[in-house]
Length: 213
Length: 213
Image (cartoon, rainbow over all chains, first blue to last red; front, side, top):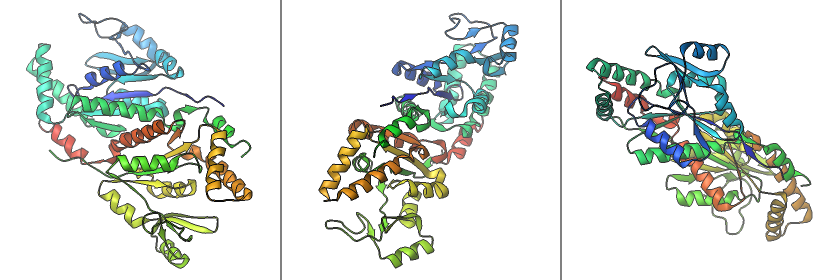
């Protein structure tokens, strides 16, 4: 009997800053051996504590532009004067091994991935449960990084803009309770993994079943 | 904050006879209060032990034809000289209450549902793990109903024909182990329930989140 194998999927998580996306992504990575994080490349300066090839691939603007020109980026965007993008090679390698890749990217990156990889893509948008909660988390985060009031307002405007793109996603998770949200993100992944179009070898398998009936 | 509600989904299970579909469907119905079985109408004679409006709606050929003419059937087909079909009214009522309906129908019915209700539809095809297993189950079933060799051959040819349509379905479950197969059918249902397009009220919810940011 032929073996059924599976092509990996690209699992995109987007949300406004402060909706809990990072917590959910980390939990999925912990709980799924078969899942790895897509590391973005960026031209922004490395901050204290950040590790190259773990937090980001830190690259010079010229090198980044070369990667774009050589079609080595799956998607890229400019955010606050810095470039961010997803190098293609590590993603292709992981998918072809039948493993899944999770992407922590915004709506711009998601739109670009949709254009080139719709069949492999599963997209999830995470929403905060209420405005008060979102504001609280954004203010806490800003306090940690010593942001000015104007930076905070910029961050809130960006959150509002990001949220308006929820309708471009396959799934929406409202993060009322982080354990529940993690469970939902897991079950989406599990269900998408058994979609027919991700299974390779099915036609031979069915031929084997029918043979001689 | 606006309430998020959900439109019910139409969950179709198809498989060749003997692949375990009925067992899986019954388990889902037991485990999901929010799920009900679509009862088919048929023109075939009621067998001993069968209950009207539970196993089937048993109707006369004229009444069946009237339901087709009045567009009261979601789908219908002729199988071995008898008509089978899905009455529209009970399905519409259940879906509009935000509950899900499970359909135990063949590829012909599934194709017809796809044409009229693609957005509400989630389709699963169940395959047996191996030909020997399928043959064994078909022969056991035939022995129970005292079928002739020619009936058995007809049933096998029908199973082969049914299986060739697996590629029209969203998901494929290979029934190696019935408990595993039930788990998979459950998680598909759970994941599909949180698809964005099934949620009503999201745009107002997001407007509330953004208001004043």
